[in-house]
Amino acid sequence: TKLCVLISGNGSNLQAIIDAIAAGRLNAVVSGVISNRPNAYGLERAADAGIEAICLDHTDFDDRASYDAALRAQIEAFGADCVVLAGFMRILTPEFVDAFAGKLVNIHPSLLPKYKGLHTHQRAIDNGDEEHGVSVHFVTPELDGGPVIIQCRVPVFEDDVASDLAERVQEQERRIYPLVLGWFSAGRLSMRDNKAILDEQEL
Ligand code: GRF
Image 1 (tube, protein in one colour):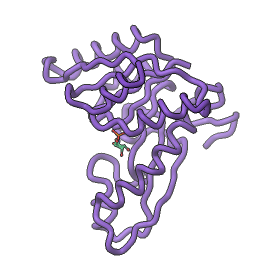
Image 2 (tube, rainbow, N blue to C red):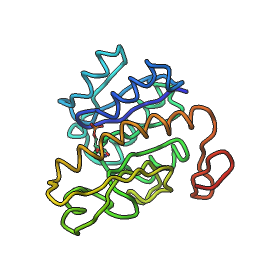
Image 3 (tube, rainbow, N blue to C red):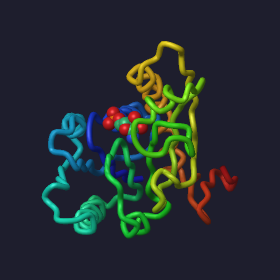
């Protein structure tokens, strides 16, 4: 399976995917990495791994539709079977999402449907939650609203600040994203009728 990984920043999830492939734990290839920000550290991680990495800077485009059209063309040029959002901090148009329906996955740092959107760790702390976590889901036009594939929970401790919680969550992200992509690559995972299906079972 050819993965195209979309990033905006650090790229620790990208690194986890690269490492899982290198270690033989994930049977896939990263055919390309795209960042919407020129200074994303993940672009260096890709280059270090010998992966083609390009920046499509959203500030060079007039509107969301033209950006997403260019993004789609680049993903298709990479010949990707699966589009992996890994800290890609942009809202995608419904046209883009529909073009990749069932092949587009995201990792979101909360126990969805709780805390869609930004600042999830701070919101969990502010609400006095005793647990928090991360979700991998298929992307549908509703922001952070597509069917969940897997979630991992972590505890929230009393003196946690957002960065403590982010670190605890991200440790789990690096475990579960390669796992899910392995399921997808093995043909075990799909989306049907807005539901995530693993081995013919609804998740
Ligand atoms: C992760 O916490 C991910 O869940 C969120 O953005 C962060 C990206 O981190 N969507 P990285 O760029 O993969 O290091």
